[in-house]
Image (tube, rainbow, N blue to C red; front, side, top):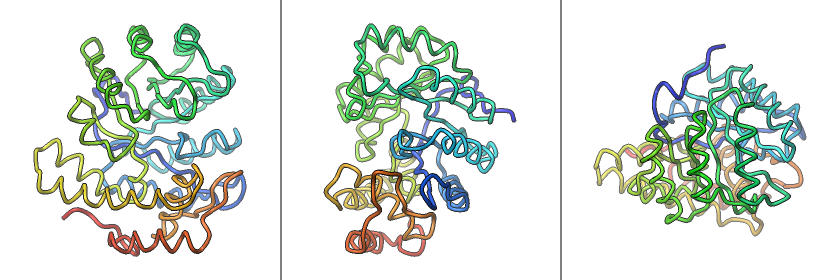
Length: 314
């Protein structure tokens, strides 16, 4: 299968949802739910999809299931939008192997975060990317997620890594807007780079700093609101931007339900199940929301008009 050449079409711009991984049972992909989910976000106008990231619970999934998620996603998407695949593993060779599988399956780009568990120094991290990038047969986006990996892609490190032509940009989920702005400044030496923000509520600030869009988990549930917000910001339509922001901001309340860090993933999956998209089962060791939590999610969705159908900003 031919892939979309991200390096030839220019920087990726817009909303790229970090997809949940729908599960019907432990280590069993909810294929029909995945198809509904992918069609849901693509019809909502997203610029691409990113699978096997944090929201996709990648480190908790078996290698077999990760590969199935890749092949099924590529098949369902059918080149309608670029498919980006998280490939990071604690083992160098497993990262390369998953990237090779993704390329063979027809994915369009690989996404690489800093290796986790053993914190790497910046010199080690630089050498790691320099060594692994030539072995990954796809355009490569770097993913800064220090809250979970314990290591930053420091700006000086990114500047050195900008010499690697297969690297096409950075996704930053640090939440540090000063850092994000410094990453955007690197586009002076790599104007082809895409710089995308993770924390969804910071989308406007990220765009104003020179960012190209967002990898926003809430776009799993209501892609049209996030796409509408992005388009309105870029187009200077403040009235529409305000309406879309109000929906996105109200949606943030679902992330306050539950008391564990896993609540962000559980809330997203719960919302998707409530609007009839896919199952809400998370990967072990997490549990799905119980009825009281689901009722709170349902109430927020009801207020957004999302209980039975997707709301937009019209």
